[in-house]
Length: 182
Image 1 (cartoon, rainbow, N blue to C red):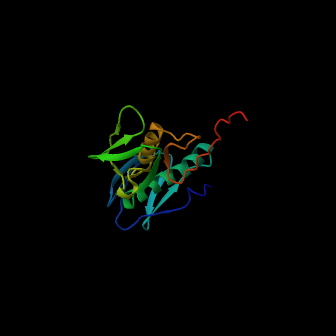
Image 2 (cartoon, rainbow, N blue to C red; image 1 turned 60 degrees about the vertical axis):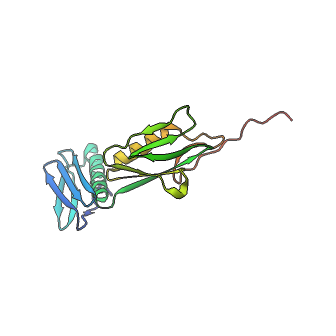
Image 3 (cartoon, one colour; image 1 turned 90 degrees about the vertical axis):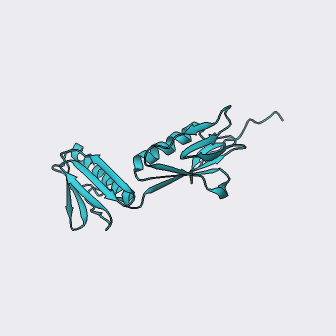
């Protein structure tokens, strides 16, 4: 049996979960998330916990079991606590600033890059970072990861000088530059 799938998901006090066949609606202090799951997987609420069960031990059902539980857990954590990702900008003249709710990036191009904030996502550029750090917050973990990935893709880190946008804690393997004749 799936080790992840059989773990119950505790529901915090301020979170309300509604299950309608294969659609789950989770409401909390930070917002509301809705997701439709495979009808083969059973989702039940018992004693303030969510339980996910599968009908058979077929490979398809086993894979859906853990996935469904993980997605449900992300929904509950998202509406109660929210998710955060931090991006670090390194390079001379590379920086970010807020323009309303959108993100304005200076990445060494001939033009500024403006990244509009999707629904449910907020950007923050801390003053003490002087524009070299971006904090992305949201309740949907999938959308948050996609936005962070798209911003990183605008100027991925290069291995020689390390310039570009990286996730916080990401290690970039550095390469030695060209060696001249002796």
